[in-house]
Image (cartoon, rainbow, N blue to C red; front, top):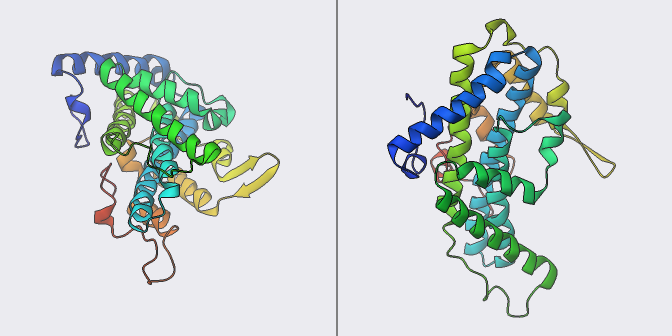
Length: 281
């Protein structure tokens, strides 16, 4: 199998024979469930799903940088949030790439924490069930630690919380599962999809991303609207996640969180510092 991304953890999850078998099973699902029945509607949906997955990888990277900064500045009160939500972001990145999960008019974006964790680690279990269960339990512990701080705020501070949960390894692995899924979908489309379906007839799916309503409150993200418009023009079919990311997209995403001041404030740093969990352009 020809892969377009240089994987750090994924290929070591199981022996090569099993990996090939799992990849074939997943490919068959993409081919039979999606590629052979490809339509402009599905095309629009999956462009948006891959865009969401890339944003989850970028978000996890930003949270990891925030964790580094908060530890350095002794703002440890926030650490459990950064750790847990980095993993949750990448669980969602996987979910958005699953051929078994319906978009459901955008409701997939708002699935619960527990459902995202269940689906992501179940999928990881196809490659290695022991690793998947180990990582799932560590994720649930991160969730519990976040809730301890949120709801109990222990008088002993964070002395009872663990900081040895292999966070970076979990993040790399989850990001690579999402990337691998996106590669297999692209291969299935190249093999079976009708090329005349590689169009985005309207922005109905993109609206679910850029226009946000939560508990009656409305938010509009002009940057998401711009980036999705760019994809509609320049990449009008789903691409592997590392190709969906552009230098302009990643620079603008991380730059939005940088401080305007140079006085020892939070900064995402240079592009060379964004590679901890994924090869971000």
